Structure formats: C-alpha cells, structure tokens
Image 1 (cartoon, rainbow, N blue to C red):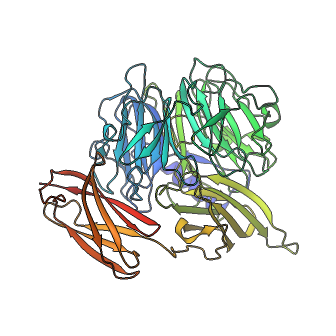
Image 2 (image 1 turned 135 degrees about the vertical axis):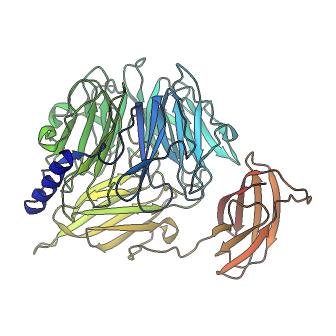
Image 3 (image 1 turned 90 degrees about the vertical axis):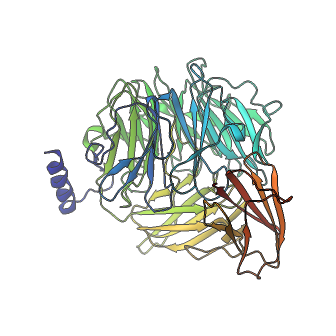
Length: 580
C-alpha cells in the first residue's frame, strides 16, 4: 500500500511540479532496505568505491555499525562484510578522512569515554573488507565523543582533533601536540566542526560541548599550530548552550553562520559579520525550537538558491525550516513530510538517487528506525561539484566554494547564490556527502570560485545548471583562473599497483614523473622497507615491480604497505597489500 502511495505521489509531482519554497520528502527506509533495528547515533554518507553512488554508514550506541550499499533497486547491508563492528559498544561520532592519501575515503569512529576510550579507523581499499588501523596511527585513544580531521595551514600535514587531543600527521603516525596549542582546556567534546569563520582561508574550530559545559566554544586559527579562544566574540559575551552545531551561510552575506542544537534547552541561530563576530539571531530567524535536539543539517532542499535547515529532534516532531531568502525561516515540516520523530540523533545530506535533489538520512536513539527522506522535487536547478584534492589533503577538506549566477533576463547582473565547505564532520555524530550541492533557483549562467586549503584557487565560468562537475586541485595554481569545467590536471603524479592485493610481485605504475623519481615503500608503522631510484618515461607511464623484499633482500611479512613516489615538488602515494 505504501509503495502504491509513493508511486501516486511521484506521478502527481511530475504532472504538478513543486515551486520554490515547496518540497516534499518520502521516507523510503523500509522500501529500500535500510530498516535494521539499532540504537543508532551517527551517520556518514560517501562514495567508498568510486561507483558514483554514495554508501550510507551508521554508528551504533548499541547494535551494529552498518554499511548500506545500493544494489540497483534497494540497499544491501554489508557492514560485517566490510569489517565494521558487530555488537558495537557505545560508538558515536563518525568522521571522514583519507589517512593513507590514496583518494579513497576512510572512516574514523569515536567511542564513548564513559564506557571506553576507543577510536576505530577503517582504512578503505576500494573493496571489502576495510582494515582497522587506529592503533598503528596512534588514534585508538579518543577520550571524548567527538573527532574531526582538517588541514590547519596551507603547508601542513593532515591533523585531527581526536577528542581532546590535537594531533598532527608525522610519517605513518599522528603526534599529540595539544600542549601549547590553545586546546588544553577543551572538554566534553561532542561536535567539533572546523570552518573558516573569518575568510582568511584557514579553518577555525567550533566545539559543541556535552552536558558539562554551559556554552559552545569558538577557537580562531592563528595559522600555525596554535588557536585562540574567542568564545566571547558575540553580542551576548558568549554563545548559548550548544551540544551540536550546523553551519552555513543562512543570511546570504558570504560568510558561515552557526546554528546550535542545545539538547534540553532551545536551539539558537548566530549570524557572522564576516570577521568571526557573531550576533544572536534566533528570534529573527524563527529557529529557536526546543524538544531536545542533537543533530541538524543544512542544504538547499527546494533548489531555490538559499540554505534551508533540517532539525532532528528527540521529543517533538522533526522540523524542516525553509529559508525566506533573508535568513528568516518558516516551518514547513508537516507539508514537507518530515514530522515523524523517533528520538533523533545524527543526520546527514546527500543526493542519494542522483536526481539533483538533496535527500536526508536521519538516525535515532532508543532503537528508533532509520529514516531515508527522499526528496520528491523534480527540477534541474542544481549544481553538484566533486573535488579531487592533492597530497596531503586528497579529500580537499577545508575547500570553500562560492557560487554566483546570472538570470536569463535583460539585466544580466551577476548575483551571489551561496557558499559551501568540504568538512570531515558536519553536525553532531555525522558528516554529509562531500560532493557539494547547490540549488541554483532561476539562475541560468553560473560561475564558481574555488579556494583549496593549499591556497590554490581559481574560477570556472559559463556553467549550466543541472550537472555535476569534477574539479581537480592540481588543475589550479595560486590565484589562477581556469575556465574549463571538468578540468584535468596539468601537472600531476599518480601511482597505481596491480595486482593489489598480491602474493608474489606487484607492478607499480608511475604517471607524470618527468625525468625520474624516488620510490619508497613503508610498513604500517612508518618504517622504511624499500627505496629505489626509478628512471621514468617523461610525463608518460613508467613501471617498476616489487616482490615483497626489503632493501637487504629479506622477504617481508604479509600486511599493508605504503608506496610513495617523489618527483621534484610532486608526491603521490598508494597502499598495497601483501598476502602469503
């Protein structure tokens, strides 16, 4: 019966399409096989195997961590096949990263310090199973619920706030550099969100805090390994209570604002003036709901060009706030089909069915059902952007994209549409699909400005709505202009190995290494196993082989190894698996 109703609704929306400001969601969790019963905390959405269809990964306070993969008509639950935890023990935060820098997303899950201090790092080989490697990277001890990865300066390695520990990648491990960083007094970390609050192209930190703190805390990045607590930098002298946080440019003034979810109190909205000074705009925005909120997520759900808000509440109906275009919102929850609430926890957004409309996955405590809220809007007023970063930040975390557009009218005046940032964590316990989504409204000619964390920057002009662009960081230079959508790298270094896994010899392919490169092979602890000078074939593809022996000629043990190539100023790495 429900399936028939969905078909009827889909037909009606095709005949009578929704206008901007209207959106309808249908919960397809049961029909699409995402109906396992767990005490679920967090959710992350990402394409783990580059098949152009994003997977859904959920964390369990009690029950199983799960991975849902699309099979063509519904989702298969493959968590155990991928090595995720069965009978999970108080797992909460899920964070996005690429630890081994192979352009395949890895997953980090934080436990609950009240029960355990464990962190779980699932290394992704592009196929099942994942490899759990937290201990090898010194990330197995979390202390707090929340963790998030970021790059703190244009030239830095990947870093992580791992609970209360500020850690930076060095070799094949992470070093604790908390002392002297400004993070020594952080506690009760529940939702760490890295975002650029002041437009200086490095990520600052907002910490949503657990029940022991009175307010959320804001830290400004000093551009090195230190941060300054500027939590007082508001019109009220501090933020209000904030367990979770969602962020976006809600008022359309080209900076990131904050929406704090408060748990037992009222949620609050804070508008940024562009310098990192925030004003309480809760009353103006009409978003100060209570009802015990943990997660909230943002997105342009009606594709009209401004940012909307979904609030996953525990004790009252879930809320869909539609933006009026000026940072004030109206409650469209009942009309939008999202009101069912089951003790809400994390939530995340993605275009799950690749139709250009942004969908929502909401998960729930107390064995409440998972919700797949599939957007029934049908239009081509969208632009999606997939970013391919460079070493050491292959997921392009911290990249900011601003979108502008012109309407098909006589004025031809360009207007600002919105801005997005790629993040490891986007709200309490959860992360959105890293493929950036914009609604484009009535704009017909688009221009995107892109600034990577490395400060490589550029723009792409004359973009038509209704498509997905793949943008390579390597195609940009510092403050350069690139007018070609789907630009391929001009300078690059790429490593591949086949077969992988292997049990005898693997062939390593090196692309773009100029007149030569140095090849290094490390074990999972960062110890150098093999090094070799490789004579390469110009900018083409050259090959070498490794037979699983060290520099001394001794056969090495089975396991995961890392191959790194260095040619001039370019580096590339990949991981290989030796099986006996």
